[in-house]
Amino acid sequence: QQQVKQSPQSLIVQKGGISIINCAYENTAFDYFPWYQQFPGKGPALLIAIRPDVSEKKEGRFTISFNKSAKQFSLHIMDSQPGDSATYFCAARNTDKLIFGTGTRLQVFP
Amino acid sequence: ETGVTQSPTHLIKTRGQQVTLRCSSQSGHNTVSWYQQALGQGPQFIFQYYREEENGRGNFPPRFSGLQFPNYSSELNVNALELDDSALYLCASSVDRTVYEQYFGPGTRLTVT
Image 1 (cartoon, one colour):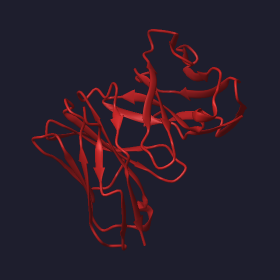
Image 2 (cartoon, rainbow over the protein chains, first blue to last red):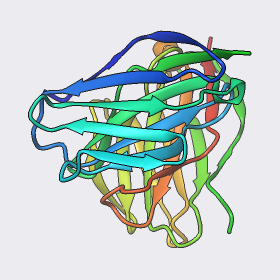
Image 3 (tube, one colour):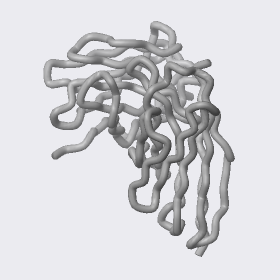
């Protein structure tokens, strides 16, 4: 119930392509869904976030799609760049804490 | 505006020892949350401090304890270190305890031998 399941574990995309990372949850008490980007040796950095009352949020090349009935949400990175190569974590908020997925390692090749 | 800072960057301890990790929250933030990130895993919530009081705790034993000071900086203390405590310890601050827009520090890499 407290888990957030993330897939795929790793993703290889060519420069200019679309990267898609998916997350699923069970607990309907989750009410805020952020995505974090983490580079090696660094802490996670907040990328974009969504609340369950909207189905999509876009910020630059990054878009979150949210399906409340399916309890799924995904991150789309358009026009992926080598600088996007990092580990991405989805998360969900429950009672003042974030529950994180297991991460997706994205590699974008030129 | 200063971001979240943590010290030390790296630390090596022996099993059974005690360790203290420190965190300075971002300016204007009164809430600090601590997370443990094992290699290849997502961060796991340890506990949160809001205005110097513990406000929620994850599934970690009592040998993990913390403090928050009047300036909202925070410490994480771990007693009786075990090999499995080896991880990246992350501190995150937010404007309030709702953790919307939570910002992480660079972490402290703890190795227990």
